Image (cartoon, rainbow, N blue to C red; front, side, top):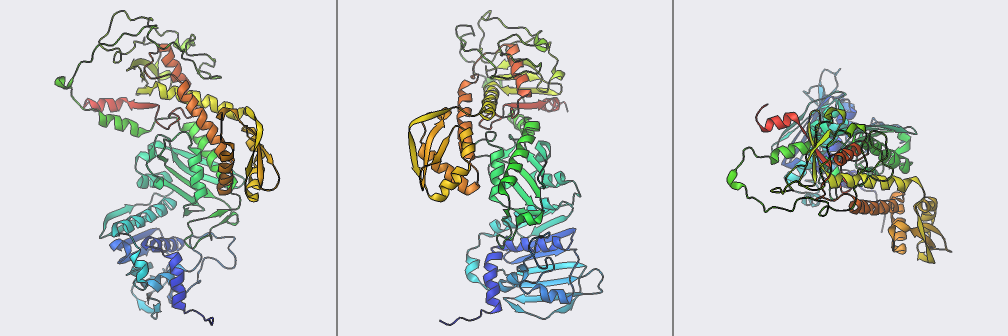
Length: 619
């Protein structure tokens, strides 16, 4: 079969299959061109989810007639010259406009600011019309009609108009977060107008426009640098989370990306702080030398490849964990809002059903296991003491309840344990304990309101943090296998595992080569007990091949520690003495991550005095 040269139209249609997958892809390319042109105002109008109409107008630098003729030809661009090592613009391939013109009806009208008039050019299914004069404002208007009319097979694979419109909205939001100094307006017959005014250098204000006003109150600032790579942005406190990862935004040198390494690092940084099936909210921006990152991995330019991926991953995880340790223990403000919605004003007497009396608390009915702090824990006063030991001077004035109740109460689960009002709430962030209700919730008074603490969840976190600290402070204990287990693996997996042999040994897993294509496991972590060594090794090999890291074993050990902490913490239904409650509060204040338990649930909810007054109509 003879080889022949494809037509220019067919070449463009083949390229369009990679560059323009759906209306949102076209919108992304056109918005990137507007931003590269220096626009400060971008308006996007759509119809039929972008399939019938997609119009992008900007006030950028504009183009003259000569520029328009070149703009609709493949690989014509003003953004790079000879190399791909110094890409500082969003677009650079020169494929977007000719690709769109080959599968749709494309018209471009543009005018430079210093020009008396504008010009217009049209392309329909790859057929180019000559440039003609046009009345136009400074800037550019690109109009795309009947997308994929020239390739009906692609048109059949598009989703509903509503789904395509939502995809365009997501593109606009990502671009808006990356460029807060630009005003974006998105409108169309299939949606209400989305207007995002420019916020200048106030990135958090722009994020609040996209992620909601609650994000500003629950965001923690990130600012870190390592070996020439800078990481900035904001991430939410662990208890401020969502049901999917759609609220995680990543940018590399100002370019919105959806890179699996960055998303994996975010997930790893929040390990043991987010409930299963929930996702943190994060907006992260990486700035580095363009020569250290390849943005030309895919024509869509949404994937990137770093020269040192482990450096980037370590920077993200370290920066987020440091921020969470610094400011992540506070409760999400949405918790108080949920509590307020749960309250119903007024009391309905006929809705009350008295419960049968319960056995009053006594030393015989109370669990006999003492309530002690995690090993090595220290309270605000600087002393390492158990909760049953005598508290420091700050808590000396608290009145201790007697071991037996003076008289039976109607319901011991609803009767708060009295505490003398001698600890000043203003002394501590979590205030002073005032009561214990339902033998599980500690009510503390703060300077500005009150805090309700789940005693089991809080102590569970304290125990876990103490155990995790022990995990990373020294080599973990291992158990020697009587007969080493031999695991057959591909040679490349063996090589990858041996690169991490030292790190695995610190975690109690001792491995060595056993001839070609095999690994001998001689020791396994004692903490894991009886373990499937072969399955563990294969899982680690797969993880290293995928992420170039062996964090899976550490995660398993932390999971075991979390399970042990859950069973080793103070249980619900345990009546606490006032000094025990206050000691728990003090320990929470100095423990990183104490705002949520190991399963990601909040350990306490804060209710401001103003919120309480709202419940009674006093504000």
